[in-house]
Length: 405
Image 1 (cartoon, helix red, strand yellow):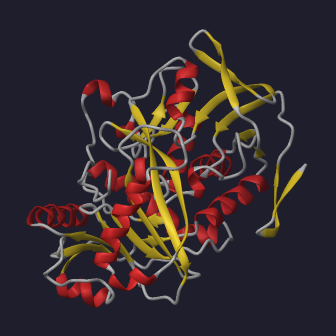
Image 2 (cartoon, one colour; image 1 turned 135 degrees about the horizontal axis):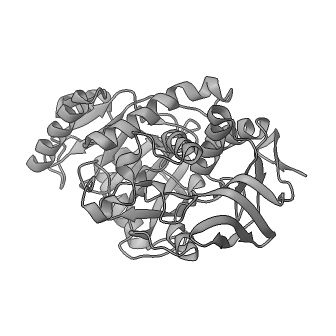
Image 3 (tube, helix red, strand yellow; image 1 turned 45 degrees about the horizontal axis):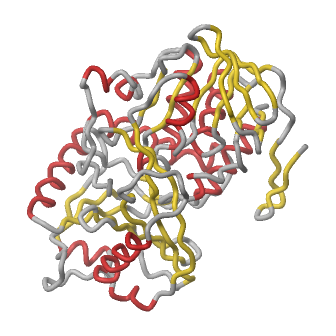
């Protein structure tokens, strides 16, 4: 039976009754799950795959993200996987034959203190050594690139400069999900909605299937790609993940004329601002400090976010709020993802991306597909194995990645 998506009446995807057995099951029908299934089918010839989504296609974190795409991370391991992801992004509109409004308008990360400047210049140097496009802009260059930003000296957080990645940008997140879903469907992947995983079938320490609200499904391999609930699923399978789940809030304004030419982020004041193609101002903040699974957060976080945004962009003071929302982000001890094998045989995990999940969508799917198909990690995701929390080989992007968590 096919479902019809109201926003795109020409777009259909399968919502079949589950088969009794699949070669692989992907738990989570968001961006990472869809990308994993697509690359498994395209590059590894695995088409007897089911994506199990407890709600509707891409209705979780994929519908509640930053829309920002960039690869200007500090550490070698992070830069490698995010740059690979950005290169995949650049080819995807043609590859998926779908215009998901990928716009390489650049991303600026502001520096407000001398320490910010030192860390930012260091990151620019590291980016260049890793082949990532990166520039350092002084305050005048920031103003030239984004005329509406307040660069005066008499504000709480004066703009001393910014890093800038010209190839970075944004994409429309729901369109990205539909693009991957269409191609995965064409390759024979089953996309099963309203199918919640409630347990795992195991033979000793080997997973052999899942239990769902629609019955038992056997599988040769199972991959967890459910942002925000990975620790809950892992617990069902018999192991713990070193992650915490937090609400992450954002908002959009009513429609306005296009006045904001790029993407501006400020880790120091926990705010990012871009303008969508239709004209909404898209703003986000840091994660709420408490743990939780609710797709909402404390209003004080939005209040602080707006105070900082209006100071940086005085013209926004007259903008009217259209809607707010909250996602659920998994945050690891080192603010870097876990992508690889789990302690349970034939069970794989992809989680802990924090605020980096959307930008890492194709890279996560590409490396996860390789890991599932070969039962070994690719060189790009090998450093992000779960075992690093035992060995101490952490990839600590706290602050270094110029993100709010």
